[in-house]
Image (cartoon, rainbow, N blue to C red; front, top):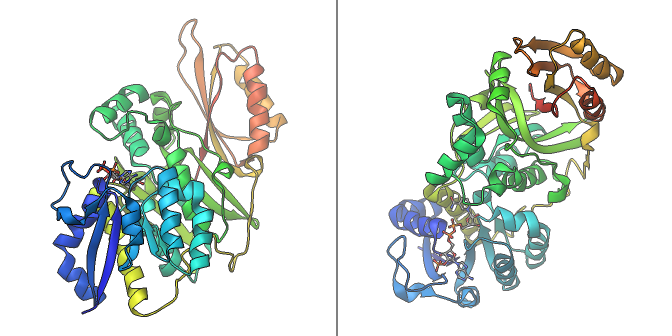
Length: 433
Ligand SMILES: NC(=O)c1ccc[n+]([C@@H]2O[C@H](COP(=O)([O-])OP(=O)(O)OC[C@H]3O[C@@H](n4cnc5c(N)ncnc54)[C@H](OP(=O)(O)O)[C@@H]3O)[C@@H](O)[C@H]2O)c1
């Protein structure tokens, strides 16, 4: 049996998981591959710190270049995280003609194009299945399983922390700050939760998914992002009364020859498949032109789910090495069948909206609000008007028909200027498909 030598940079949560998976399932994986996968060297910063899994100390070095320069190693696995050092070692590995596997979505979101070009130049592969949705093999689904399809739309719950918080807020009626503090105490949220609750982590992953699904490189600044910090239990409650749940959705859609991408808290019907994705789980619902609707569900992070995705990339690349196949379509940027799609400006998208307008409880207020909406071509589909509270502002909750985002934003500015409106209007997009 031939041996394929692997070098691993990083022996933390994911690096430890990869080594453990190769130890525990090694014989089965080797049999499936038809060759032996051997971890030849591992780099970590603190060689004497406890290891998450038993490893031969002779394999460990503090210098990632020892791994990269080892002539026997054909696949370098970057699991150190961050963007600057990871970029440097990823490029060094590619320059040395090694195939690269990474779980680092931040690296791909910031330096993906440079890494793709370096890989193409050296005719080596880059595997990044673990960078999006942890254990769900969604990259391979888009790249291989659905290769014959145009993707009409892709909706994803791709940040477990945000989904955990929204699930708790929905099921227990608790406010955002309280649930976030609990998630931090349980280790589900980082001490600095900005990337997760601000929607930026989901934007990193959407950028990768949409770039592959639509053969169009999408820069991170091109993805409009809204987080969940402004969501209040009242909006979750009203959404439920209307038959919807609130989820942090990453959306990519092909409409009218253009591509829509965005991350925002969004109402989806309570019977939508994604509505059942609870807690830290991830889900991706997509509609492919030939295969039709598809749903993928699983753990989006964690040691062994992520290790599963990393090892799947290692095995795929190893199989290509054995078959002496040149690098495949590894890059993020694939000028292809659909060509370069122009991104639709956010103000041009058309969707339905949920609005909560806080107003003085006086006669004629609803018609004033409706008048402003009407003046901007936004029509109302349904209204819930809540019970009166003496002297207090009351909410008018509305669902609009489909409207142009630019018109809706102009209407909101007008509504918030009305003297009967007491607070900034809450506006959430609604996704029916
Ligand atoms: N954790 C997850 O569930 C998950 C899920 C999906 C993707 N990811 C991605 O996977 C990557 C790794 O995450 P992780 O959670 O495994 O991180 P981690 O537990 O912090 O492990 C990082 C490892 O890299 C080593 N390291 C850092 N800088 C180094 C350097 N300059 N030279 C050599 N070694 C260095 C550390 O060494 P020491 O051991 O000596 O500290 C540690 O072993 C990240 O890009 C992350 O975004 C993680």
